[in-house]
Length: 440
Ligand SMILES: NC(=O)c1ccc[n+]([C@@H]2O[C@H](COP(=O)([O-])OP(=O)(O)OC[C@H]3O[C@@H](n4cnc5c(N)ncnc54)[C@H](O)[C@@H]3O)[C@@H](O)[C@H]2O)c1
Ligand SMILES: O=c1ccn([C@@H]2O[C@H](COP(=O)(O)OP(=O)(O)O[C@H]3O[C@H](CO)[C@@H](O)[C@H](O)[C@H]3O)[C@@H](O)[C@H]2O)c(=O)[nH]1
Image 1 (cartoon, rainbow, N blue to C red):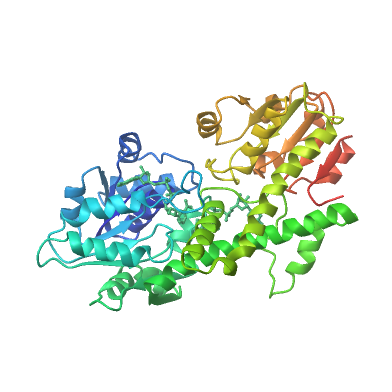
Image 2 (tube, rainbow, N blue to C red):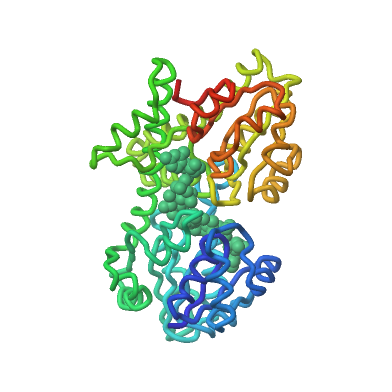
């Protein structure tokens, strides 16, 4: 089938390449010329394991192309995926919908045959219905445009696999209008459906709410274990052993119970805030008031990390040197949007310490976002003469570090594990003083 993907960032570039890999003919559309130039050259503009190969293969085989032209997009296909950003509005909790709005404004009047726009971006409930109305207002005479919602659940670092083999597919359709969306979605995703992927067909509001609820649940699970970590710290418990023990209960499950400096990224933080804001607009403020606590627990872990660094430096960060390992919001990604690691690094620097940051993949993005931090060329360099080393993203490279070798470069053998990822027995055997969030 022919289709376009409007917006080719982390989500859109992955979706476009994976849809082409399924045999569809795909046109990716973006407004960022430098991103388009890279994609056209078969280069992924961000780090995502496995995506480069899929992108290149499908460009070479002629199934995947890119453009900045909405007219070309409207002409190319009658199925369009909308995948632009929905960031948090500056100074507010609500989502900024200007990008999704501008896509619908831009393409609707150019469409000349019956078409479906499948929204994939994460949007507040009610957005799809509003966009559907707007698309119909802007449509040429006699041209039907249907807006359906197909929220995306991929995780960065696993994006290709999550797209090709999703846990489930959700398709929200506007059943008050004639709809072809279910039939078309079943054709697009026929491989996954044939392989047993459950598909939930529902109304637009439910589809939007499924996405917001899934992320709210994941954020809540992380903040739950981080709240328990606070109690473990106070009582001398070990949150990692506790998580293993409660995780053996199938009803609880071990996934997303990794305590540490908490969740960041371009999704969970802004999505729980947008969900609260939308619930407030709908008169259901109290329903989601627990998410405010989830957010606060999360931010408190970052502050606690700064505090522990201060304690390790004898009560003041002023004049001390801190080696920071990790800048991306999670391993296997170069994404630094709302990264807990960079947030902690920035706070420590503001407190008068010299920080040196190293990340295997996120250096370029970090420099752009936090130009005032010092960046090192390797983990070893970042730890040079450090009074304390902080591990803030659990990259394998850091988990495998040799503490004996690192001893030679630091001023003081003190490490704080912000992700509960280090084998403290190894580090302690090499003479290191080890602390973590939630482990004795
Ligand atoms: N990143 C993820 O892992 C992920 C997963 C699931 C859902 N989502 C949701 O998907 C959406 C996109 O997220 P992202 O992380 O890919 O964002 P992103 O910022 O990486 O990508 C957005 C892209 O849209 C482009 N764009 C902006 N305006 C445009 C326009 N008018 N026409 C065409 N392109 C335009 C930008 O240049 C950019 O390349 C968000 O709603 C997000 O919450 C993201
Ligand atoms: O036990 C855990 C698991 C995760 N995290 C942190 O939580 C954040 C988010 O991690 P993850 O959910 O794996 O990354 P994302 O790529 O942001 O994916 C989330 O956000 C996407 C965008 O909405 C959704 O599609 C995914 O399903 C959802 O997992 C990261 O900072 C992680 O370090 C923890 O602190 N502890």
